Image (cartoon, rainbow, N blue to C red; front, side, top):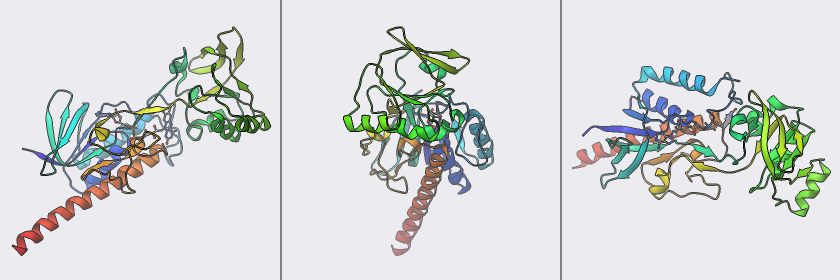
Length: 308
Ligand SMILES: Cc1cc2nc3c(=O)[nH]c(=O)nc-3n(C[C@H](O)[C@H](O)[C@H](O)COP(=O)(O)OP(=O)(O)OC[C@H]3O[C@@H](n4cnc5c(N)ncnc54)[C@H](O)[C@@H]3O)c2cc1C
């Protein structure tokens, strides 16, 4: 039976950064990836020094190229299940039913944003519809910015966006969960609350221009940020019994270790600061921790042999 030192599920920035650390430690590493990385609709990566504006696909191609010399294996397949036996060996099953074995398992499968079910949302997503002002606020500075929040509170995001534009409106699409004290904040910062139900988003070539309401009215809008939740892309960590916090991410310690021995989670799946550079850093931390664990296990085994 072939046993990998580490199987990594997820080949986004977190998984690939862990892979490079482990590859450079001469570890036998296998990465599974379905290439559904979270920012695949984005027009460019920001907040990553030396890589400003790079397309996400281009960024990952650079990562793959750098990994080539470290003999990290990559398989473009979905992992559907994973278990651990009494000897702490992980058995990982892919979508075609093949089972692979490893001493350690890293889950870096990211999150998936829940888009509101409104015509046009997907078309503009990543180009003029966004969820993170730090990722995309600069590009739409001084424009007419909207915040969409129906089932979640959007008042804090609306206030935060005043950092990028004076012209911010909050759209609640037929619902209004705004409490009186929140309304006071919004009013005093000249942020109108528009509760009219939305019919569709309208624009051209990925550029949003108008929000069209069900009552026939419309409002100009150049960029829309939304709060509508997200889900884990993969439930393997949860199936192992890993702790999940209120925000829906897996709880780890600062070295990315979960409450399950030998199981690590890194990137968006585990923290609520969702940046490429943070995901990469967490992947690197997981890589070092996994390598140290593997080293320790070998030393302890040798020590036992000598003692005997
Ligand atoms: C529109 C948009 C714009 C963004 N802009 C920026 C930005 O400008 N700057 C920035 O720093 N961040 C940005 N982000 C956030 C950034 O995308 C994430 O923080 C980052 O991708 C997290 O990396 P990750 O490796 O944790 O997960 P991901 O990049 O999502 O990668 C996870 C990988 O795991 C794979 N996977 C999932 N399940 C399985 C499975 N069962 N088997 C095999 N593979 C699996 C997926 O296919 C995917 O390739 C943006 C996000 C969005 C949505």
